[in-house]
Image (cartoon, rainbow, N blue to C red; front, side):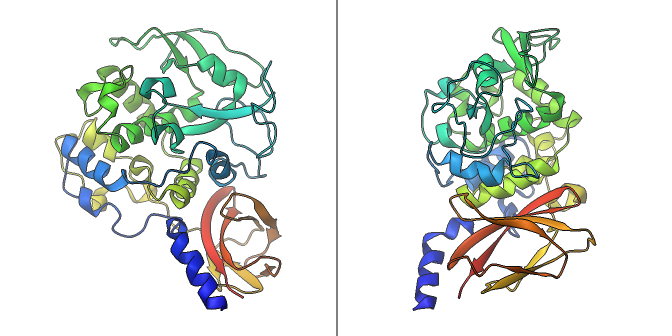
Length: 355
């Protein structure tokens, strides 16, 4: 009976079987360049699971989470507990009043159509007030501009990107996250390669789904702000929910082969910088587990951990030493996600409880 229940869970939840890129995931993109490469990636990532607009709040506890378990906001340094003070329940008057769902590609650009409206790869939890200030303006760079001050990040002003024309005012995010948003737009121009050229603004038919302005801006940010561990963690977490990945986080040089200096050169994963590939920081055993798990790693430091169910609810959290048993006897049979913090690097993996 127990085995039957577990098999049923596995059959219904095949989307969460991997927390990191499986071997051969990008095989279909090997040896391609330019628009042909973008189309190959489109074919790979297009059929993702739609978590739904309300379901985004169930993604964020594992995708946008700080080391202490709070909401990670790229528009402010405010602190929220996941699921609390969501705008709608709380009306914002000032920065830090509440957080909501920010469409980094404004939903008005694609008429709030599905699945774009609930694609977690571009919808982030952000401060409601700053989200309102950004409105549906393009991303860009501005001199001076208007900032909400305090804990708010980013500013609104006239574009200063030399040689390129935007649609007027632009919102410039904090330097720390410019690369994050650039790779988000690369993802959107690829995942929606069959739609994005008609969205206007930063998207168009100039170069593989983007305008010349978009290419100049986002390639600049992509090069200046390399992939962070935060992005890698988020890529893994969203993958467990949507069953697709952001290729430009796994292999940042893909952008060069589509929009950049190598767009006439064939891309091969074997030639990508090794440091850009996410490697497991830890291992869980036994897996499946019954009453306890142990965490194996090369570190000798204490390890912080947080265990979530598939809805994003925190079930257990704490600190442990490498090899020490972590009691999980309070967990029911099923699939769980564990986020481990090792030397200020976080990574997500799945494990199964089968009693």
